[in-house]
Image 1 (cartoon, rainbow, N blue to C red):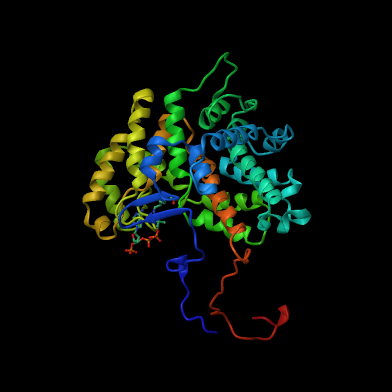
Image 2 (cartoon, rainbow, N blue to C red):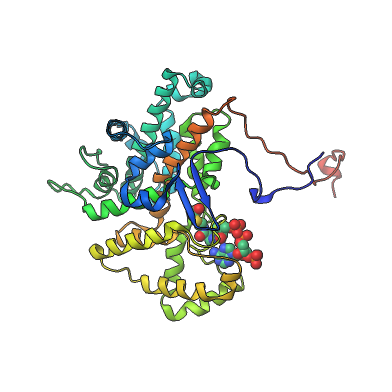
Length: 401
Ligand code: CMC
């Protein structure tokens, strides 16, 4: 009663007040805590921006050092996790593994478990509870790369690698992915830096589907590992984090620039989807897509150009001139970064993992903000408009027609 309009897809529903990320979809603006994404991509790092997103201000030198040390210190996972990873089928999708791994991880940390004392702990905001909350944040950000690298290596039948010391967040990740037993192995610093920029770009994007899922799940006061696992599941879908994988599959299927016009015709007839285009919020341009293009140039200098690049450019050019896409205000989104991941040698189905790992930061920033909001947490329980049958009487199975 009283509900007259169902807001399908939450097109016009604001569920909270937030101080974390600002997006102006018309002007193509993205800011983390007020700082333009372009400045952060140029001058900051993924972990420094993670601190900014989670705690609200850029860290001092000491705060930055402590945060980075804590995160890297917590990158090691319990040795038993190897057994868990080995229980997956050889061809399991790495997002299925990663999603499960986040939930699995929660079983190790009873202090974050709601059935013990986590239930009200995180909403208290006392120094003791904030310190426990920080620890879960370090754990989740620190272990995300380790879990991702394990999901990669288990499918290849390779031994797991203990996170190295003294490397940056993304260099450590690349090390864990690549290490073959070489002495003094160091990942290429240009590639590690490029990945760091891509991680920073993916760290948060306010209330997208996965972040909303984390908050929806977290609103029951479940532990943050379970809430992050839920967000990871949401991100797995092809309309969200699965899109960067879909972009490459689409480009492979188009094969060459000469097939672009026919492909776009099929999109207009709704037989195909133009992955990597369109956004719920950005209606002119996605500011991240320009930084992705610059980063791609740096990476291609090392790796060589991806053979799909020409098709991607032809597609981009043709779509931007086409009335169908102009009218619907569809522009490239961040998902063309799949070309960089491909050039760096990541397998196709690993691309959503490269979105989920940095997005753990944004999920945690929003989760922390919700836990500490004034007046406590209110469980997210939307209403529906019931349009089903009225009351009817049960008919025994033998009497049904
Ligand atoms: N190709 C062709 N037509 C499209 C596309 C597309 N990629 N995106 C939207 N449209 C059309 C859509 O059919 C609709 O047309 P009409 O009004 O004639 O029915 C119109 O444009 C409006 O689109 P919408 O589906 O109402 O927009 P939405 O805000 O509900 O969906 C979206 C946003 C991102 C799901 C959608 O644009 C899409 O499916 N894009 C392709 C998948 C993709 O790249 N996803 C990654 C998004 S960015 C990273 C992330 O946040 O995960």
